[in-house]
Length: 204
Image 1: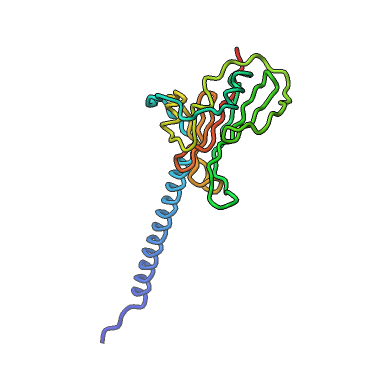
Image 2: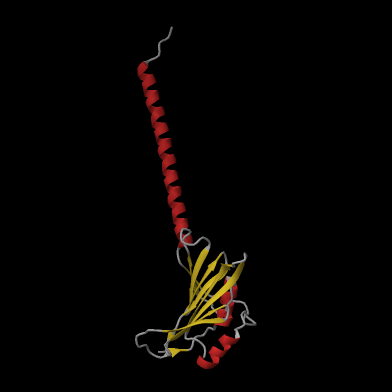
């Protein structure tokens, strides 16, 4: 009867354990590398992006009709030196929802802020401001923009060929993206316009 050498068997076991150990280490390294690659891709996806040389489509007409009160305000004060548009849904008392267009028109040189809801004048408030220089006319008007416009429609309405895109964190706003253009900031949720702000321009 042949006897096996216990020393040789022990060496075999050592080599097997080493191979298994190296295999486990290799798997761990692959997994860690995968996580870093995924994190890098996620970071890239969430990083601000400069988009240039966009060819926006033609905007043949304004998508929103100003109300009589808004037209009267234009006659008395002219177009605002800055404005903000906010679009959202509001629950009705009897059930259902209605679309809401909340607008603030700012007249810094006149020290007045006008608020409209669905075209109805809701408030005229004083603007407390430090002394500012002369303001240039805005290249944008409130009636150029309406709720649920797509990115292409906003770009066409504003005539933007360059902008910065900043994806919003999911924890902050699911499906939201923020954009910056020339004196313009706007936000889309699930590809639909929900917020827009036209910023005042100081004349140089």
